[in-house]
Image (tube, rainbow, N blue to C red; front, side):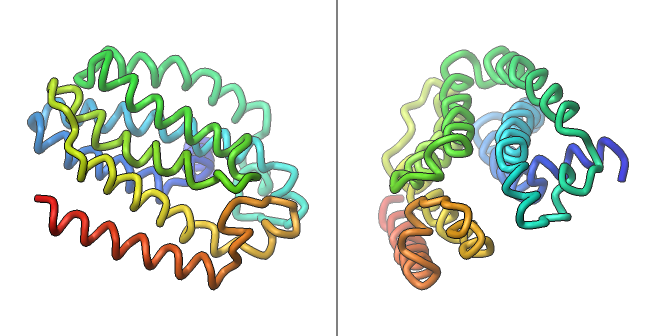
Length: 216
């Protein structure tokens, strides 16, 4: 595996691409294709920080559970190299978002979402408040683009983003539920268990869909 491939995989590439794609379509709607690519690029850089910091913090836990698909555990990239890339990416993401089409206001809203993602990695995932960073980050994603056009984000947008973000949190935890509980990770999904998390995610998704259907 090349270093570039390892860096992309360590970013949790699937979710990173999904979030970047969502940002691109929102940006294309509110701007046009040119700025949309720049906004998506800035969003992509921010997502790299969240993914890389997650793998750095979880390294010892990933080793203990032999998660050999993780680039650090597989030794496809060294811990120090990934840490250096993360530190380098922080100012790059700030510059790309604050001085790109999002502007200062939109850029700061998006970087608030990134701060929440990093905060989740280092603190919130161990507490019953674990859904909070997801709620803020997913609300910030569409709202930052709307804010960049000097428009106040409508209620349905940031509330819907928050609801779907929390649902994504419950779904994302399911695959590692038992291992997380063994490692002492006590976020809200781990406290509710697999069945409780599935029910919570389903209720939230239904609520989110109803909100979108009846608020437009």
